[in-house]
Amino acid sequence: MPRISEKGLYMPSSPIRKLAPYAEAAKRKGRKVYHLNIGQPDIPTPQVALDAIKNCKANIVEYGHSAGNESYRRGLAQYYQNLGISISCEDILITGGGSEAILFSFMACFNPGDEVIIPEPFYANYWAYAIEAGVNVKPITSSIDSDFALPPVEAFERLITPKTKGVFISNPNNPTGCLYSKADLERLAVVIKKYDLYLFCDEAYREFCYDGEQSYSAMQLQGLEDHIVLIDSVSKRYSMCGARVGAIISKNRDVLAASLKFGQARLCPPFYGQIAALAALATPAAYFEEVHREYVSRRNFMVDELNRIEGVYCPRPKGAFYAMARLPIDNSDKLAQWLLEEFSYKNQTVMVAPATGFYFTLGLGLSEVRLAYVLNIDDLRSAVECLKEALKIYPNRI
Image (tube, rainbow, N blue to C red):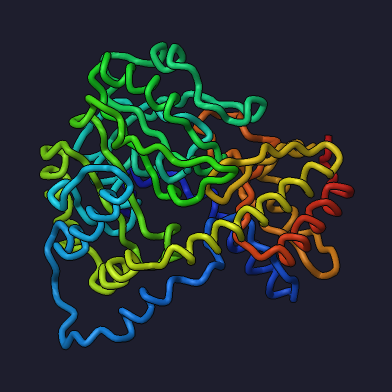
């Protein structure tokens, strides 16, 4: 039988989805599974977006512009201008979700063997995109003991080699919920400029900032116009994960032109997704205000309840809708599988994401899990209760 490629062998499986067969088996046994493992909000998609799809009168679902519909690019540019970020539709390339935006920008900016520095823990798929593009990840570790604060610039500088070509951050951060400040980004900008690097910034969770905090965009950094590659997405902002519409935003026209060449792999962004995304730009402010209140309530409830459990520590995230928790366990992968295969409380269990999948450095995250507070508070209450009871009897508790 022919062998698959080394790249195919080396590609990591999704740490978020690899436990799905165990969850499905638990459900076949009649158990209720509370999904805290994946960032799929239960928040309704804005009605204006749903209506736009329903009312679409197109007779042909045709190819669109490879860079994305001009109407949507102009609308998205206006969205950024309303945030005080001066960009035009020419600075935007629409992609099939934020995932494609990262992959295309990696392939446009890196040669095989180049290095990108990423604070860990990080969204696991970043590593997968790096492998696809032939890029080597250099992790820089942040710690739960400092609530996953951005490491000091000196730590970044120690990792820079002649092969280093970029730094990648997400802000607010997935999986930690950490929110990097303007001062954090300005300190990092000094390193970017000093070593002539790219700064990739995934800002998919921009709208989800709490406790009076606001997200400071990398596009607001001065003097780095040709260095910034911003990743955008409608998935979380409008609870439209299945629309698969994202964007690469940059003042560096060479990056956009090269990325567009890689767009031949998909010819054009999704037809209906762009219709929904354009309409979603008209989402009323009241929608976001309600969503914000809901997530704050969920975060406060889940974090407070987790920290009441003996041996558990969970920092209070400032953004996104994830929290990382340290548990009194030996191995988060074993716990996650055990919860689905062997544990049941009131015929219910909980699905968590082992933190090992978010660390690049082998051996880190063994006692940590990522929890997405994307369920309503009643379900969160039941999920946390399940986890509390599970930790009482988990055979490898420490």
